[in-house]
Amino acid sequence: MRKLLFLFLFIIASLSYLFEVDEILVKKFSFFNDLKISYINKAISISTSIEKYFNQAETIERLRDENKELKEYKILYSATKKQLDSIKEFLIHVEIPEIRPEIELVKVLSYINFNDFTKVWLDKIPQDDRILGLITENSAAGIIVNKNGRSVGLLNGNKDCSYAVFIGGNKSPGIITSGENGSELEIKYIPIWSEINKGDEVITSGMDNIFFEGLKVGIVTEVINSAEMKIAKVKPYVNVLKKKYFYTYKNTNDDTIQQENTLEEKTNN
Image (cartoon, rainbow, N blue to C red):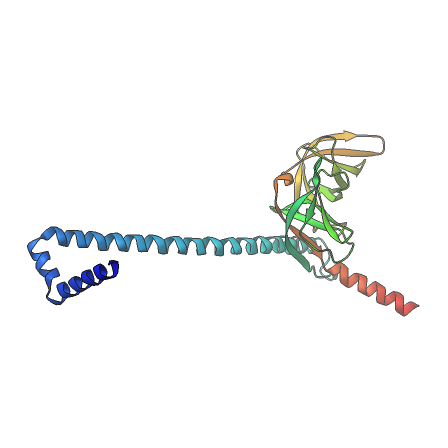
């Protein structure tokens, strides 16, 4: 029955167009024409909206990928720029090895212990036992260590996280580590003769081969003087505990140096 009804309606529609019934109706009843135009405009509007939606989704995905790539290039640019700034401090004939950093985006998988938010598993397979640097927003975020073939992120504030830094315009050296409370860090082993003050900026020194020189760390909030050294309390620029993604930094010059040292040892033996 339904098939016969459908066939009947189809035949009527076909005959209507065949004998120009559509044009007659439009001429006699203008509201048919208005209804037809309204339907066409609505169909075009819906089609355009759907096309815009899919175009926006594709654009967002493309921009997200470009943003990740630009962040990587920004870190590479900062590393190279700091290297060039260091070259200016030496004589023109002094030979300085070219910096060849290796940057990789990594994701935080989970906490290792639920009572310690500064120690996390990362989705990176370590190649060796070297300590790598963690970077976020052009700031030092912590370090990576190899634990039984898995990458462990020790974030700023972890008691086992430490790296070399410079303090203030005089670039006073020190080693930054965890502070007494979770919101601050501490710099230890600062030479007693160093001139440091509250408000001095703290940056990575690159002297430990974990980071390059110039990554921002934080601001000195207090200076404590002791008999043998100074200690500085630091408020970090970035709250790294809220981050889900980091960049890892590795200076591949270290591989070349290690290979040269190994070859030299074999030659001497």
